[in-house]
Amino acid sequence: MNYIIFAVKVIKNSGQSFFSDGTAITELTVQLPQVRKNNTKLILQIVIWGKLSYDVAKYYQPEDYIIIEGYQTIDPDDFKDVYNDMLLKKYLTALLKKQWGTNLLKFEGMTLPGGVTLNGRAIYEDAIADIEKIETDFDTKYQMPPDFYMG
Image (tube, rainbow, N blue to C red; front, side, top):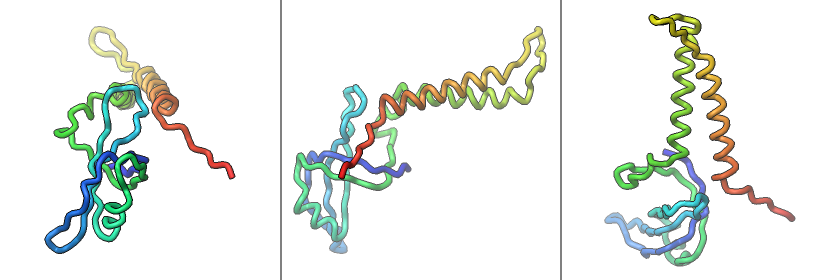
């Protein structure tokens, strides 16, 4: 689970319904703003319950923007492309390369049969450079710009 805070656009307010114990719930369908240039529309279903449910059902309509805060889980069975993100693949590859380099550092200078010498330090340092580059790319290309308040 990931802790999240998002500004989202309300697409649909399904109105109120009630649990068997009388607790009110309101369901909203919302869309996240697109930061990356791809065709994936990020749509979420949000369920609000309790006293807040009355205000949400009354005041929030389609085309309104709201800020949501909570915990998010991604179910790979429902969202099949969750692991098909190229940035995620590159980052995971770099992290695995770093671990591989760390493991080989223990055997640095060891000569294998056939005369091959292990060089874990080069693999490790290359992985660190890759990770820094990917994180920098992520910050500059995919992160929303900070909002500054003037007053």
